[in-house]
Length: 495
Ligand code: AHR
Image (cartoon, rainbow, N blue to C red; front, side):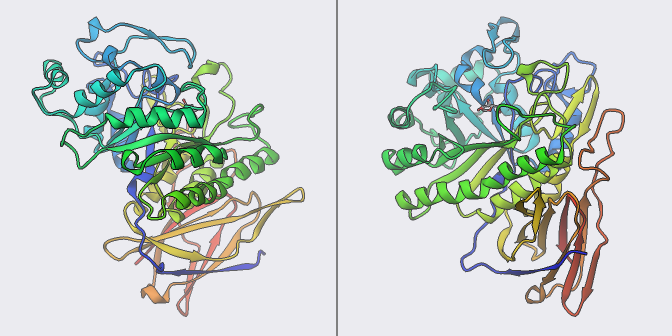
């Protein structure tokens, strides 16, 4: 029997809202994410709306997807948006040089993406090309999307069937400019960024434009330092950060048949997100003490070897309880740093990396990660609560990690939600919680776990891993005793 862990939850010193945009997603032209994933074309036998699968639209709406980043990733800095507008049969083809070298027909373009976002009720986040573009191409894109009427680009948009401009607040100014975006130094990119950002305007169509600078790779603190130092504040609203979880970058291992050692290593990388945010935030605090610039973790998630027999450039992997642990702990980290982390994007929505949806022909399944994201959507735009506790350890071969991760929030109706994760592969952990100061007498809860850590959903058995009602809560004298089974994610709601 494990020792009891006492957890205190209280109102924070200063109110902080957990932005719903922390629960964002990312869909790149990569493998089967867009083509043969989200987008099957209007002629497909699979039910669709303007070519986008109806079952995926429903799943993402139910997830309350707040925003969607597109078209990359590395693809973004190869993408020429003009090739993806106008009559589909006249669009040129292009080779996707980063991802499998496949030829694409540009049939899914800006209209398709922005109309999809409207259908989903999600805010678009356009990652625009800097690496192989020009200021002219870039600013014409902004004009095409946002200018109301009477400009060359607005008129072209109208000819292409869209009268009104779209609402697009979030714009990425290139992606991974230290790598696939152009292999630039931080100093060089900071200047390039200043140049591009100067010509970006919302054409009085939005409530402003939110420009996100391509951010650091993991712990490249120099990158953040230079951007924060060299980019004037009136030109920037967000700085990005990318960090993935894996066993070893050069030996990622199977997404399904992994050992406990591999699980432990993956969780170690996932939990590093906390240190990364603390350290990048400290740099941002130095140059932006008033906290006007957001940290945007616009790529995160588990990255493993592709499933056997699939194209290595397509990054198709399965999704097990390990991924549920990554999602649960990472989202708790983001919530707890919501004062600076205002947006994040899981990589990637469909059939790529830590996907929430997998498809095979007409079949579709929801992954354990989907279920965690859905359980956690109660935190969207809620007020962050402070959680204090000392975690018990998950010990493996002499190394240790904190076993428990928690975040909590209070929504506008006054309901408290607490999300708890126990990553321990073997031990249950008992949590003692006092919520008297919130007047809470009872909880209901949902749990995601399974018999084995490697359990996952398949097209033959799509509901093997799914949330169930959580019953292991006892309330005595204003204290809740919560028993968290090994590798479980629990979300509680005060009644
Ligand atoms: O998400 C896959 C790739 O990972 C993205 O294209 C790139 O930005 C990152 O390296």
